[in-house]
Length: 187
Image (cartoon, rainbow, N blue to C red; front, side, top):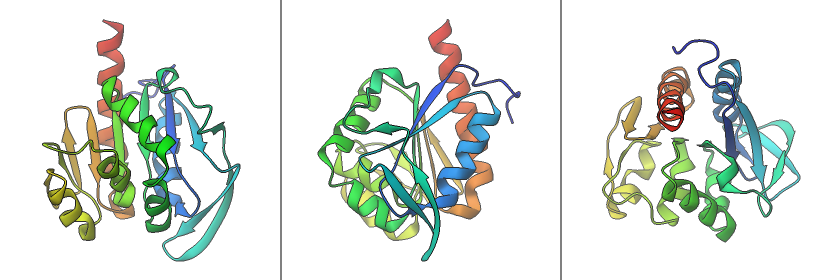
C-alpha cells in the first residue's frame, strides 16, 4: 500500500446515481482520503441512497452537481457499481461526456462491478482489458474489450474489479495507479 500521503492534493470524482452499491463508494473513498486525496461525490441528484446488494443503505448528499462538474478540476475518477446505479447512469448524456473527458485527458479511472456499463455506453472500452461483475462480460466483449475474471485488472491508468469482496485489492491497485499518475504530472 502506498505511503499515507501518496495522494496528497489529488481531487477524485466519484460519479454515482441513486442506489449505488454503498461499499463500492465508501471503501475506496476511505482509502483514497486516508492517502490524502479529496473525494467528491458527483451526481445529478442532490440526495442519494446506497444499497447493500438489495437492501437499502445510508443516505448521501452529493458534493458537486454533475451538470456543473468540470472534468479538468479532477485528477482521477471512481465509478462504483450497483445494478440500479449503473443501469441509470449509463443513459445520462452528462455522465457519458464526463467520463469521455476524463479518458481523453488520460486521467486514471477506477471502476468496480457494474460501474463499467457507463464506460461501455460512452464508447471507451474498445481494446481495453477489464474485469467486472461476471454478468457484464458479454457486454464488454461485444463492445470490443478484453474481459478477464480476476480480482483486479490494471490496464494502463485504468483499474477494474469485480465485486465488493475485491475492494481491498481494488483500492490498493487504484492507490498505486493514482499515485503514479500524480508523480508523472508533477515531473
